[in-house]
Image (tube, rainbow, N blue to C red; front, side, top):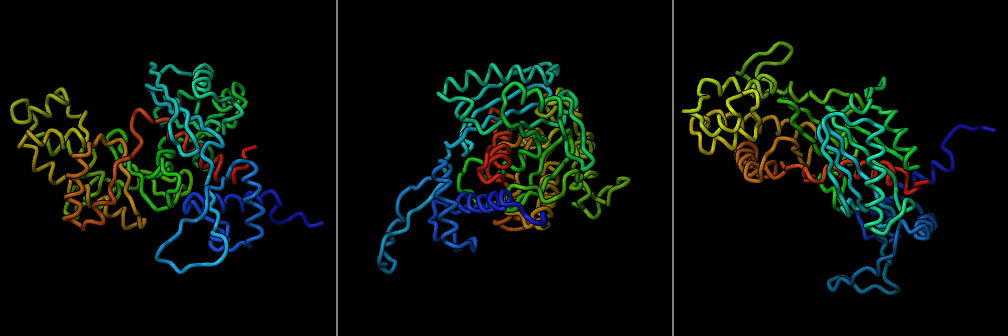
Length: 409
């Protein structure tokens, strides 16, 4: 007997995954339209979707609305299907060097409960598992749910907390947390999915709370200890392979006549836009007399400079305006390069501390540089600080539900 090829279970999971993907992006949608999009026979789609309805993964939500301008058709109108977002619920955990964030959501990443706990960089995997146990019991009681209603646990850990959580790196560059994984599985008996919180924020996508978000290319750009890092994403999956250097963005040239730095091209992001580089441009005027707002915000320490603090202070410190204007222009050059390089529909900014007013300031400069379409593609990460746990929830939902075709067991 030939054991090569795809197994029946893998084929079933693949077909269900494709159907869930179409419903997620196009729904509510009929079986006939699913068949046309996927190129699967109507009979096969009916068998699969009926099984998923019996399992409460999908639900019928009524007939197709009547279009008064369309040609009148004979026969019964199409029955539309949609994802049952309360089929299962997700637990998300976010961990950094100061805070633990735990939350409970639906499959639509709609938050039902949340809790934040501060710590002194002394959290251990075992202590986190114990903390989750007591927190989870209360959350389930508050929402009248049980462990059987849960899809699993998604955990996002910031790089600054990798060592604290016993993290290591595989040969392919992926982070792994065996001690934490075992502690959480032993205490909850639930599937556990752990990854870098930064990667999870990127995979969460632009429309993390939109059940029918269409897949798109985007670049997740984040600020990390004074430098820039980027994760290009297609749909919900990173474009670059695991372990790729996310600091490649710092090699982008933003000023051909700019400064040189060993290992980087002339006028690179690293040489022109890093916190250290911008601080050197500010240093000649940095004083309590000439830049009082920035001086007070940084407590006289330029090493604490961030893009947001520069833009905020430049509103009143006129001596900073030339540097702020130059920084914004070069920032737009960097964003436009990423926008073109990855055919991005959005550039998603995280960790910069920008306010909506700062975003509009950046967009104005971007529109002057490369047009309104590019300017509107620049957005702030929609996951706010109080909802960091959503990174874990969306990662769990993507990997533990959609990529498994809803086969959670």
